[in-house]
Image: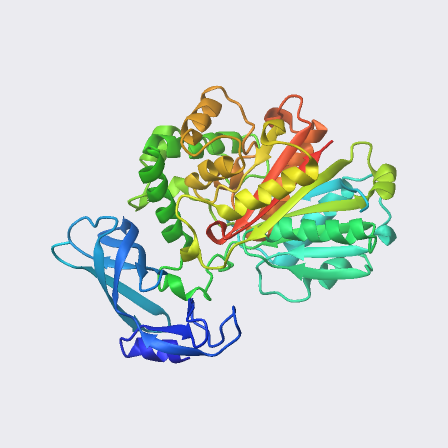
Length: 107
Length: 368
């Protein structure tokens, strides 16, 4: 699938309906609202922390990127994250999608 | 619509031993039919199976092994709420007149990987339920000032209540201190805050009003049903809420013509400790802010009205069997047959069963 192929290249693609511009997540190629095809657009790769916790020494959390798209992923930080904090996203794919978020300094 | 009653029940002991799902289904189905004095196998015209197991054609297999030749037989899968979804499907067959007696059997084996929803790309590699469990717990603590001790009381209470349930996975008492000092899975979850996958099976026989009167002198009636699926992706949940439970509860209360204050006993889906606090709030039994205090009071007064059989945390969570075992507990309570777990004067009971972080909920109201 295109979404996963793009993750392998480190790119997070979001599909938007050509007609109603609805962002569709998880991705699919037909809009469920108006039944039109979608266009893919690269994420801005920035989001904010909605909630977080820690497993062993690694933080993880629920992050919202772009137009309300929510993702569970690793938060790469040595300091305790904060709700609402700005994060930058990096992605990869190795049999499953992998999402990492880095805290943007001074926010 | 025709009235529908529960007329027979049967279970296996929940355990960590791996076992064939076919064998487990047979054992609980056999126990169920043995619980009824004069059941003619020729009268059972439906056999529904609830499981997340990959085995095929289980409706026909259980029918053959039980010596039943039903009109209707098939499986139903809906992750952790497969059991109540199978019972509600049987209800629909009977109330519509397509069938008048249905055996519903649910089972899971301990090694079944059914708790991971691979479709949900929004979870990435964090697909195990402990990740959403941690998010819900952290959010509850943040929004409602819920304490670690209040969360631990849910687990201590349910472990204590499970001691009187002969079918429970755990018969070990756990103190609040033991729960709080149990192995840390994440910063917000300890091992004793989590329900455990296990092997187990449970079966229930449903009948039309006419049949029920010939089979049981204590039929228990399904008087309210509510179901809601809001999504499949946990990440679409509003943290701090289980919207599907709130909507399903409203439907079930309207159908049964009751209010939350009328509930004498409830089995709620405590997949993690926080889920019990959230469930009793969304069901209208208390509020999120007071849920910790509510459960503390139950524990201190030995009031078993919430999860008398020990819930998922105490009894174990064999996915396909859980909703059926919850329903059996409420049935036994309304029949006055719950021995040490019995709630006095129980006339109205509720079952709350949900899937995938509460993206889907099924609720039933039972009355005697």
